[in-house]
Each structure stands twice: as C-alpha cells, then as structure tokens.
Amino acid sequence: MIPVEIIKHKRDNKVLTKEHLNYFIHGYLSGDVTDYQMSAFLMAVYFNGMNEQETFDLTEIMLNSGKIVDLNYIDKSKVDKHSTGGVGDKVSLILAPLVASCGISVPMISGRALGHTGGTLDKLESIPGFNVNYDLNDYKRILEKNGVVMIGQTADFAPADKKIYSLRDVTGTVDNLSLITASIMSKKLAEGADAIVFDVKMGSGANLQEKDESIKLAKYLISVSKKFGKKAIAVLTDMDEPLGNKIGNWLEVEECLEVMNGKKVSDLEKVNNVLSGAMLYLGKKAGNIDEGEKIAEEKLKDGSAYKKFLEIIEEQKGDTGYIKDWKNLKRTEYSKKISAEKDGYISEMNAFKFGLASIELGCGRKKTDDKIDYLAGIVLDKKCGDKIRKGETVCELWAEDESKTINAENLINEGIIISEKEPEKRNLIIDIID
Ligand code: URA
Image (cartoon, rainbow, N blue to C red; front, side, top):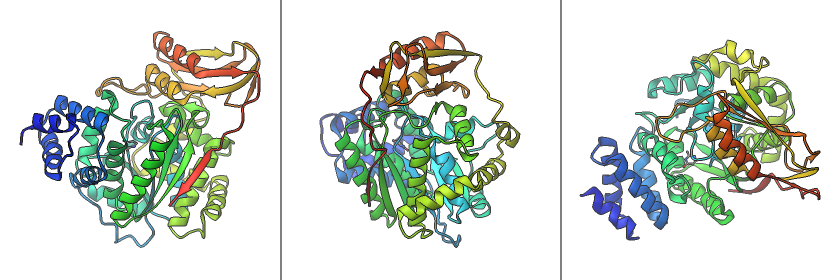
C-alpha cells in the first residue's frame, strides 16, 4: 500500500477498510508513515469523519499495537474511569486513590494535556520524581501490591495512541468523535479493567463542543466497551466553566490535596463522588450509584483517599516530602490579578478560553516537544453565579514572566462575562447512561 493513497481515500470521503487502517497505523509506528503524513490523515478524518465500523477497526488496531493485560490473577473487581477531557478536570487524582481505598483494583492508563484540556500524566509529573512509565511486569506488580497504578501509554500499552495523541494535540485534530473513541478505548481496553466509568464532558471546555456529539461519544464509548465484554457507565458532566478553582499541573495536584484534607470545593467533589460512586457500583461495593456516592463522601472525609494517594506517590517514586509540604504554596515568579470591570454576577467563565489561556501560561504544549511549566496556571477567586464588585479579583494568573500572561489575560477577559442578573444554576451532572 502507498500512504498517500490512503490519505487521499479519506480526503475524498471514502470508507477505509481494516487493511488500510492496519497498514497506516503500523506504518506510523515503524516509521514507514511520517508525522506529516499522519497529520494529513488525521485532518482528513477530522473533516470527513469515520463510520462506526471504521471507528471500531481503528480502536482494535490501536489496542493491538501493544499488549493487553490479563488481570485475572487479581482477586478483586478491576474498575477504571476516563474523562473525555476538560479544563481543571483533576478528578482522577482523587478518585483513583479513593476507589482503591474501598478495595477495588484501579488500573489506570491516562494521557497528557490534549488541545485546550489538561492531562493526568502532566499533573502527576509535576510531582518531582513521579514515574508514569512502567513496563507490563512493573504495572502488574504495582497494581497487585498497591491496589492502584497510574501510568501513561508506553511501548507496552497503546503505543499507537502514545504517538498519535501527541500529534493530535498540536495539529487541530483532537475534536473528532472517532479519534477520541479509538484513543480512549485503546488505553482502557489494554489496561485490564472489567468495567469502566466514562466522564463525558459537555460544554465550552469539552473536546466535543456540540451537545449531540458528546451524547454520541458517550454511546460509542459504551458500545465499544460492551463489544469487548466490559461493563460501562457514562456520566455526562458540565464543562462550561472550569472544574474546581485551580487550573495548571501542580496547582491541580495542590487542589486535590486540599480536597483530600478537608477543604470544600463543591463542584469538584460532586463530580468526583458521583464518578467514584459509579465505579463502586460497577465494582459491587455499592448497590447503586447513590449509595456509592455516599461511600465516596465518607472516604474523602475520613482521610482514606489522602492516605492512599501518599502510597501511590511513594510506590511510583514521587517525592512525598514535596507532597506533604503542599500548604507551603509553590508558585511561579510572576503573577497577575484579573479584576472585575463592573459590579454584577459572574454569568460565564468560558472553560475553552481558560484552557487556551493556561497553554499560553505554559501549562500545555504548542509543539510536541515543548517543555511544560509545572507551576504555571490560574487560580479562580470566583465561580459562575458569584456576586462580584468592580475591582474585585476574579482570578490570578501565574507564569514564568509577564510576557506569558499577555495573551492569557486577553483570553480570560474574553471568557468572563459579568451580568446584572444572577444567572440560572446549571446542572453539574447532566445525565447518566449505561
Ligand atoms: N482522552 C483521551 O485519552 N483521548 C482523547 O482523544 C480525548 C480524551
């Protein structure tokens, strides 16, 4: 086969066969297909889409590009969660230790920042020493010993996603239903879980900004899971404004530590507890999601999630001293406060614009090999619905120097809307599909 002919096939909106996809994905891994050819291919998929069969074939090929773990030797339910991507979405860092502390095994393969959204791996790597690259044997060993393991795509697990993911991040090809499905499912099916909870984000900060597309994504994720014999639930959650009060890699770890030590951050806690509840239900530790949510609330309160989080850090070679010192706020050199231009209520904090601003500050990548500034980010003093007076701080930007905050400030100013009338409260948990 000839790579350019496959690109042209999709460019001309024709259906790709499994053989086409197999050749192209394996060619990319072997070097026979280049980055520029893969970029063109991804853009053709972005414009012309893939049908269900193509999506399923792509998922299977990407899954089989690496190993598929058999976790039957672990005598516990194995349940994981994956988010379709959001801004300030740090839930995995609380949920994984929390659910593991309830006796469920949590095998978690995550991704890095993608488009305007953050990534669990970058957040974990903001903890000095934390290792997200383990081979199959170490993955199994850590999971069995600790009840939870948090890693990324590797040469062993979903290597095709590892390579394609970082290219999508910088080529405008994130927001496609089929590419998202194949990316998520190739990781989730490789890791060995029996059941998966999907957090499907909806709103300005979601990877798919059309509501109908997000619902379709939820259905695709569930249907592919079922085809592979996995139990699955999708929780549709609001991502119109950032989740929680902190955006940025270390800042988000810090916020999770605050929540695991008793601070109230209501939207973050609610999403965490419902998703954890769904995992506990699928893992047979709760009779239904509501009951699971109550157990999650308890485990957050009694310190079990924090204790397990410290065990994860220790096991995966992170600096526990750095973590325990979280109250001693670690910040970049430069900061800039953004204040309200008038009195009123915050009626919009556009999550997409906040996500783009966080990339400008240094939290994400503009090119595949960009270095991340782990301490950069945004701290929100206000959230949607809050009353505000002219001159009061809405949020504070943190970056290496002033130059990094100029574009970010413009984006944030575009993203904040202050209205005279108090806005209606939006539902954080929009729907649950199984
Ligand atoms: N999460 C993933 O792992 N992949 C995507 O494409 C989007 C969210």
